[in-house]
Amino acid sequence: MDTPDIGATPAGDWLDAVRWDASGLVPAISQEVGSGDVLMVAWMNRDSLRETFATGRAVFWSRSRKRLWRKGEESGHVQRVHEIRMDCDNDVILLRVEQVGGIACHTGRHACFFQKLQPDGCWTAVEPVLKDPGEIYK
View 1 (cartoon, rainbow, N blue to C red):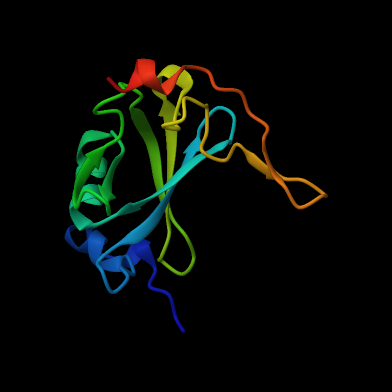
View 2: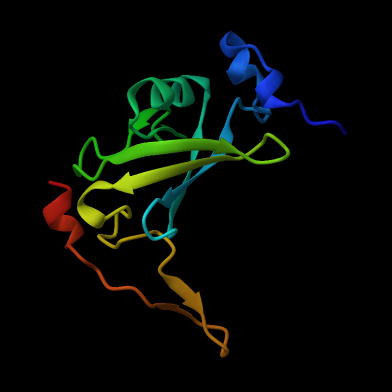
């Protein structure tokens, strides 16, 4: 299947190049610019991707709350977007971000991917809690 060339997409139609799922969503990966760490994965809809592009701040679609979720709106840990990329199948968005405050995860850790599968088949937290979530979310 041919993938459209984004460079050939008229500027007003850039959102149409994204392959949205049946619910109108696309997975979005936040990757830290400096370290290359994958911080988190969330979902975006057209409005959240449009607002992210317009403001330079990461905005996602909260499936549980059924509303736009502006990263850091409660915690203050916003993500400043340096670059927006799309994968070769046009069905995943990559946000290259600066993570303000160094915490992306609601558990108070730097990134959401802090659990490692050990050889014995057990998941173990391998990254420290940087700030107690009770202090972040009041």
